[in-house]
Length: 216
Image 1 (spheres, helix red, strand yellow):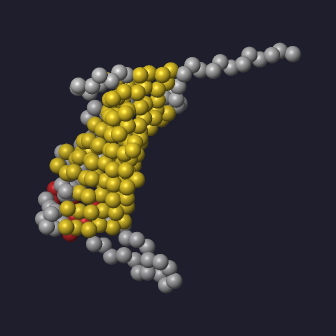
Image 2 (cartoon, one colour):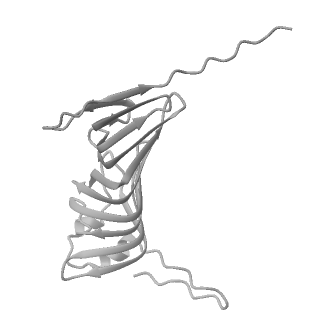
Image 3 (cartoon, helix red, strand yellow):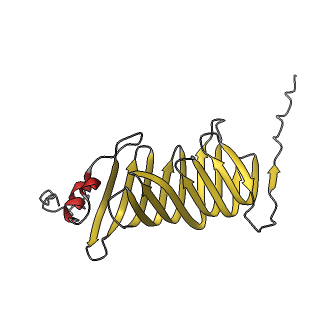
């Protein structure tokens, strides 16, 4: 682990930021490939944490105040548990004020499970009471959604809202057992899960017409 700067007399010691390479140096049993920057259409994976613990017996890493970035994707939480740093096939579990930024949208929840496949963030499942999603729309407004769980798929660029799903663009709102929001197209598909007879409900609020100007 890199040495920290000497403490300045009369000041609190600054928390040490844990460098990705320093963590790798500790976990000797892990494959060397994890130390290489990710290539391809996505940027390298960067892990930044205030502190970490390594359990060699279970090959598990525990992080506090952690941020993981890969290109435009960013995951932030108070705590994280990782099954390893080989991102060819890794699962991270985040908890405490989880925030995930994806393609101009943001998901917030109390816990999330993020899967990395072939050195890329492939899928994120967040759960909360409720889990929340929002995205700045091309029209100038914001799309906002909430549900018991949100599932983000990188390949399709979609967020699936499940369990009491609700989505609104500020003027209209839609509710259903399952809603699929396409981030790039800013389009929503509504459906129902197998065995469910719940119907989709859409509410459209008419825009208030401006009052006509009175000419003196």
